[in-house]
Amino acid sequence: MIASINSYSLIHLAAACTHLALLATRTQNVRGTAATITRQTGGDLQRTTRTTENELTLRVDEILQRKQDLQRAIEAVFQETGNMLNHKDVLQQELQAKTLPLEIAHECAEYRARRFGIDNVDDYVDRQLAEVGRYMPRRHGSAMHGTLVTGFLKRLHTVTHARNVIITRRCTHTNTLHK
Image 1 (cartoon, rainbow, N blue to C red):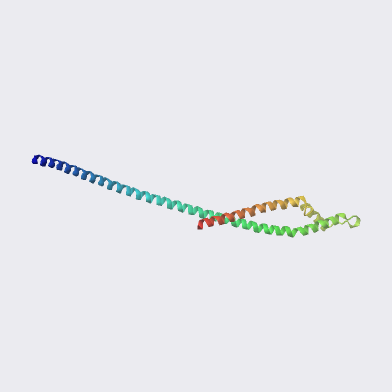
Image 2 (cartoon, one colour):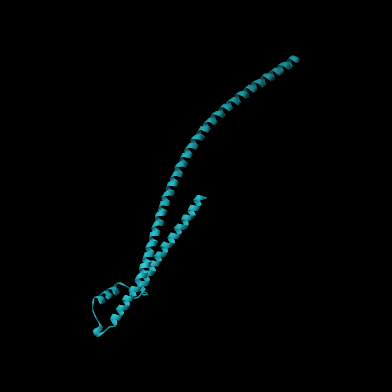
């Protein structure tokens, strides 16, 4: 009976050893396969990381270039708006300066028109006053003068509003970039 127990134990022991050897071989195969997959995955990951970094670097450079282009365009628009506002100021000053001489010229023309008889003179001054009367509106408050000034003021308002919008957006954009 002892011999049968020993042979039975030996058979179980041999079967267990065989089973353990198979498990060890399978474990080594799994470890080898895992190491191979890890190397392949690591290589793929590094290639993908490099490619992504290169693409992101190119995209960042492109965005920075566009940003610089937009900043130059904004500066140009801002400068042009400033030039237009300066020109507007000059035109307003010139308009103010011409108001009084125009009124005086119209008043003189009216006085000359009221003359009769021997006082009615047709000279160089009279012809110049008539010339001014043809090209200029009759009175400062006339419809033609009012239309010109109103149109000018509307354009002036539009330019001033555009400049203020540009300044506001520029300040907002600058504050956003520095955060």
